[in-house]
Amino acid sequence: MQMIEGTIKEQYARLWDYCAELKRANPGSTVQMKCTTVPGEDKPHFQRLYICLEGLKTGWRAGCRPIIGLDGCFIKGHHKGQLLAAVGVDANNQMYPIAYAIVESETRDSWRWFLELLNVDLQLNNSGHVSWITDKQKGLLDVLRDLFLDSEHRHCVKHLHNNFKVHHKGLFLKQLMWSAAKSTTTQSFRQEIEKMKVDSPSAFEWLAAKDPSHWSRAFLREGAKCDMLCNNMCEAFNSAIVQARDKPIITLLEMIRTYIMKRLTRKMAEIEKWKHPVGPKVYRYVEKIKSLSVYCTPTFSGNNTFQVEAGLQNQFVVDLEARTCACRKWQLVGIPCVHAMAVIMTCNMNPYDYVDSYYKKESYIKAYQPAIYGLNGPKMWPTTNNLPVQCPDFTKQRGRPKKSRNLQGDKVKKGGTSKLRKNYYVGRCGICGQRGHNKRSCSKRAQSSQPMDTCQEQPPPCEAPPAASAMPSQPQPPSSAVPPSDFTTAPTTKKKRTD
Image 1 (tube, rainbow, N blue to C red):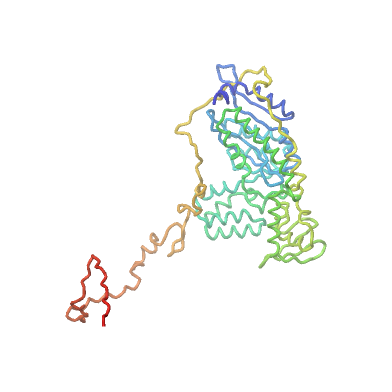
Image 2 (cartoon, rainbow, N blue to C red; image 1 turned 45 degrees about the horizontal axis):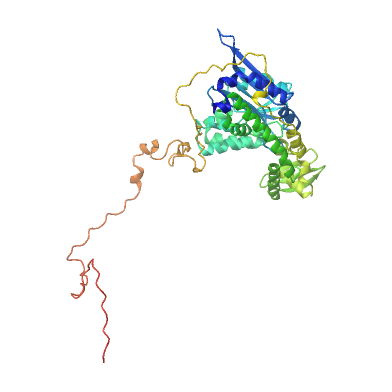
């Protein structure tokens, strides 16, 4: 294995040569390495490495929506560290890697260094038109406020619920929280919050302390054309590179670059199979909306506006010219909602004409047309005059290294049961109606003068059986009857009459 991948020290020593080869093969790429010095030594020690390939930064600016997910994952090799990643969303609602970096740990300083370089590469100019979605990593929230003050910052609702359920367990509270997060109007958001306030005031106070503009669709901005509430795109990228995270540093970087290079070429080849002006995932979503629009009744009200009835006390105004609906779903996603789709189908118009350009085939081509070029072998890399980089300082952690991920309480292993675990279910008492205990341990039952078990009417005692003399005599079997036996007897044959 060392002959194939090289020793760990040799790979760190050739990092400068690898960075030079990467810049030569992909002109315009940003490859920046930061080293530290140890007291008493003149040789530099590795600290951080940032990579943003030219094809990725050009493709994101040309064909992706202005939303970026940020996340970090552990490096499982001999020299520990963190791999930071910035991931976007393409026209087919799939993840689009933008940049990645290897740092010593997730700190405020490392995130600031990563985002300052990303700000220059994507030409954001600290503007507020980009939305960010994170898992509330250490130091990341403060850095985003400092660098992108006017930008929208979303928190992953899945991770928010993990903190919520520590003190507020139960499936009903989980459903109320997700219903509030998925509400697209402030009116429906307040209705779900009021339900939680009635059911669990403590859970309501915990959630009311969180700014809803970070986790509810009712307060999201409409410019990103994406109503994503979970950081699934970063999770998908981390899952795709999991096999590379325990390799030496150059092998790790090459596996990530090769994966992205193959992905871009594969996505460009898939465009030829598209049968519609949008991607397959978006097409299935539009067809689903079309099937649900039959339950809505639109009425023309003038000036390209319609009044749409969608059930009891559900009525919305749709403006085709402004491409708006009172439910705000159309403005948030960029795809006609079920109410707007009912109007479009009633007017016999093409629904794909009202889909935002971010989802069209042209945007998909712009994102994946730039190429990621391959590299030569280590023997053909250019030689730099920099001092060889030494391995970073490594402190062995206590205990046995983990090989598997700890599942959350409401997650089950693949192939396991789909039932909710008992320890995350909070029942309700049948006597007082409160949560947290059952009727066996209820204080009202203990204070009762008569236990519940004795309140029920006892059945009358059974009468004694009559005496043997009083019992009626049973008919006795004839003396010729054969007593029961465990042995079987041969069947008797009946004689024929001779007369």
